[in-house]
Length: 431
Image (tube, rainbow, N blue to C red; front, side, top):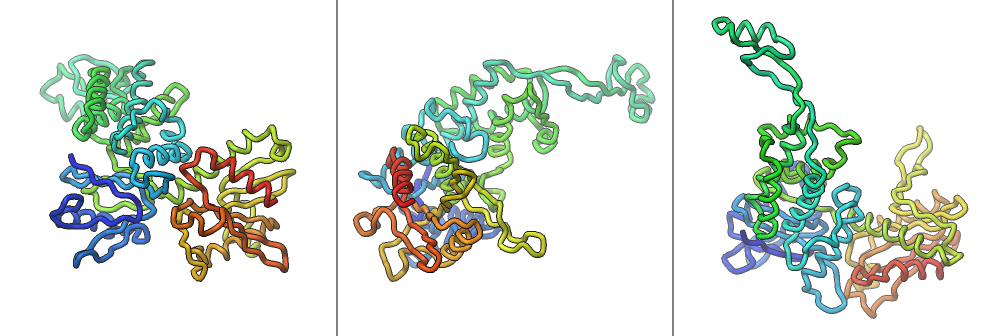
């Protein structure tokens, strides 16, 4: 199967040349993106290119698979210090950002043990699933009580009278019964086996395929699921089934096309897509929290704590608290909010006349945060891009002289391992 790799803000064209989609493939992608009631045209835009329609990708990252198996991998637009086309480094940074997401399978995934070098995202996601399968099979598949209804030659459990009369009027040696049996063929195991069988047809990686086939041997006594929705509805969460939690999340992604995006398009096109706005927000919140904990030797940061999606205030109190105001990140000390940070996954532009691409709506929002939370120190965090190098300071501050409210614009260097220590130093200096 062929994979087309694009970065955000690049254009997917239709045509016969290398790196283009056929007209049929382009139509399927267009329908997937735009023909759904929950589509997101702000993130995929139709643009003209060489006299034909083309699609510009922005703000969504991941994998889209067309019915013929052709895959489109979209990576985030992250400007690196040296090689801007280094897909492997970009993938690595993106995976680190995914670890900060709320979805359990990313929070606990051990990316250090994954062979991500030059491997497409789809194969990396398969590796994540296989890692969780390995953890399960090492401790052993869990058995459970499975409800069975059957027309049996032996009587056990409970006789279903009406079914028995209908089925066994002339076969009185049989009994139509129902009973619970303790066995491996429980819904969770059926769904894991079905996912393995599905990925065995989809993977192009020799190492992934070998591991899939090895893991399938542990499921020889388990049937494949014949009704995904019914089996998912029977999944039980207990202290004894924690090994299945991530596996069920992945099974929904692979078997039911349950992506992480806020829209779903054509069912014939499958996707694993992530809204970068949310990924960036989660990444900044978690890394900033860790940076503050790491800096506890500095007396200044010792009593600080970082909270994300803090929603204690409302725009209006009458009637009964309407329009909750929820900053992305707040930094508190002595039970008082001293700094508010909001993340924006957007590329700033080097044009002062355009306010560097900062939207007026965002500034209105920051102004409201400052007044409602009585916090004059607001920061807007953007990803750093090369267009701004040497043309704007690391931060730019906007101030309201009447009440002392300031909004600082900060460009975070995602390729810098010390990016959050640098941000903390800047926050301390400006405080």
